[in-house]
Image (cartoon, one colour):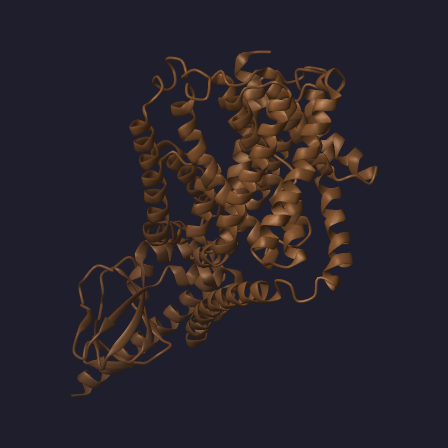
Length: 581
C-alpha cells in the first residue's frame, strides 16, 4: 500500500473493525467497549496484522482523549474544581503513593531494580481518563457529586503525571538507568539542577493555569462570538475544534503539560461562554469517533502471547490494578471522611489504567529502567482492567446498596457540604444563563419585526447587534452620508428629518434601512430627542443575515416599501401645498 494511504488505512480499518466487533459485543450482551478492544487486537500487528502503524493509531487516539477532555471541561467550571480540590488533591496524591508502593513491592519480588519498580508502580497508579468519563457518562453520573470528585481526582493525577514525566529523565541515573539519547535529555543532573527542574515545571504549570483562568475567558469566548456572527455552522464547528486542539497542542509545546490537561482547561475556559452548549453539541460526534479509536489503539498495542507466556504475572498486575488501587482509593476517601458510596464510586472509577500508563512505561524503557517485559505486562493489565471496568462498577453499585444503609451518618456532613457547594455553583451559573436568556427574550419581544425570524436563528441575530447610545441632540445619521448600518431603538426616541417634515420614532422601531436596501446615500437626518439606547447592525452583517433569513428580508422590504410610498405621498402633498401658495 502506498505510504500516503497509511492514515486512511488506519482510520478505515479501525472504524470498520470497531463497528463489526462492537456490534457483535452488543449482541452478546457485552459492552461495545469490549468489542473495540478486541477489534484492535485483531487488526493489530500481533494477530492478523491489518494495521502495522501503531504509532499513527496512537496519535489518532490521542485526539479522542483531547476532544473528550475538552467536552468534560465544557461542563466543568473553575468553581467546580475549587470545590472538589480539598478531597481530590490529597486523595489522588495518597492513592498514587499507595499504588506505587504496591507496584514496587510486586516488581522487587520479580527481581527488578528499585528504579524500575518505581516507574512500574507509577504507571499502574494513574487511571485512564477516557474509560472513567465513558463509564460515568453511561451511568448519568458525570454531573453528580461523586462524578465531580472523580473528574477532579483525574485532573490532579494528570498534573502529577506531568511533574513525574519531567523529573524522570533527570533522576534516571540515580535510579539505575541512563539518560536519554541525543534526541532527548542531557546527562544526569545534580540535586540543585533537579530542584531547579522541578521549580521550572511548577512555574510552567502555574503559568498555564493562570493564563487559562484569567486570560482565556476573555479571549476564547470573544473569538467564538465573532465566528458565530458569521452564521456559518461549518466555521463554528471548525473554531471549536481549533480551540480544543490548538490549546491542547500549544499548552504541551509551550508549558509542557499534557494534551488532555490542556484540552480540559480549553473546555473550562469556554464553559463560561454562552456557546458552551452549542460547542459541546458540535464536538460530540468527533469525540465519539476518536474515543473509539483510543480503545482500538489499546488493542493494537497488546501482544496476546503474554497471556500464556507469563499468566501468573499478568494476574498479579490485574489484581493490583483492580483490587489494590480500589482498596487504596477506598481507604483514602474514607480517611478523608466521605461516605461509603463516594469511596466505592471513586474506587471503581480508578480500577483500570490507560493512556498515561503507556507514556510512563515507554519513558521508563527509553531510560533503561525497564525492559519490554514490563510494557507487555502493563498493556495486558490495561486491556483486562478496561474490559472488566463495567463489572467493577456493577459490583460497586451492589456494594453501595448493601453497605450504605449500614454506614449510618459516616461522612454525611462532608458530602452534604460538598453537594451544597456544587449546587450553589450550579445555581449561580444557571441564574446567569437565565438572566442572559431573559434579556435576549426581552430584546426580541421589544421589536415586533423579529417575529419573522425563526426561533433557532434569533440568538444568531442578537449576536450581530452592537450597542450604542445617543444623548439628546446627538446626530445619529446625517443626510448625504454613506450607509453604515441599520439602527433599532431599544429605549428613548429619535426624530427623522426629511425636508420640512419631522417623524418621531420610539422604542421598538428601526431606521436606516432605506440606504442599505437601495445602496444610495442617506436621504434624511436622524437626531436623538432624549437619551437613546440603540442596537446597530453593520452593512455587512445586515446583508449576510438577510441572505440566510428570507422571511426577515421580506418583512423589511415590505416595511421599506410602505415607508417609501408614504414619503412619496407626503412629498406630493407638500408639493401641491406649495403650488397653491
